Image 1 (cartoon, rainbow, N blue to C red):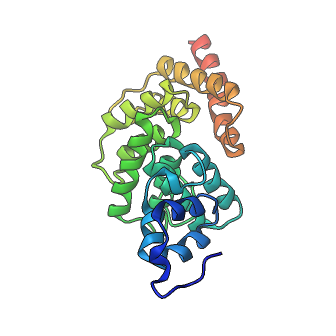
Image 2 (cartoon, rainbow, N blue to C red):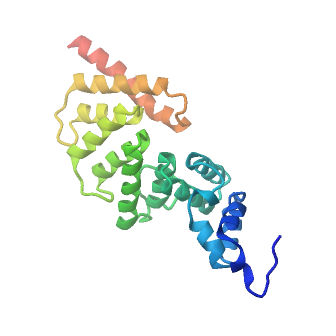
Length: 236
């Protein structure tokens, strides 16, 4: 362990500082070291040499802290992960940016969201979407639907929901089924189209082994609508 000299910690080579930091996974330790001197601060803000893993591994660190309810530490690693190109890190950084509570929910509550936060969130969701992140794509669609961080635009909401489905998102397919059934966002009521999308939602939902538990409750609506619409169309 180094001790202070007459010249302080600034005498430590930055590459050595980066190696030390690369073994630290607790953001609190890293922040404390960065506060010591410019050498540590520059190393902490530097490239991948000071990071304890690949961008996707940094995102996994974020998930570990999120699970432990240490939210600011989770945000720290999601931001590092996002800055180095990981779509999962981008998605979760956007979630934390948009919502004051632990993410999700899919809507802003209690005035917790500001327009600036929403714009930043949409920026990261779009970045993640460009890298093939299905749920981030759905969040962009919802942003256009509700006007969070972007202007309300029903046609873009539909467009982004379709993109999310193409990436395998079952909830987006259910939304499209609902939109066609009720004639939302400029669509006309169309039971045939609604049935098509509800079927896709069920198919994608059944195939997704990684879906969170709360998705199943939402997907149950799509399952019910498939039965209702099949019966209605058969009786027509």
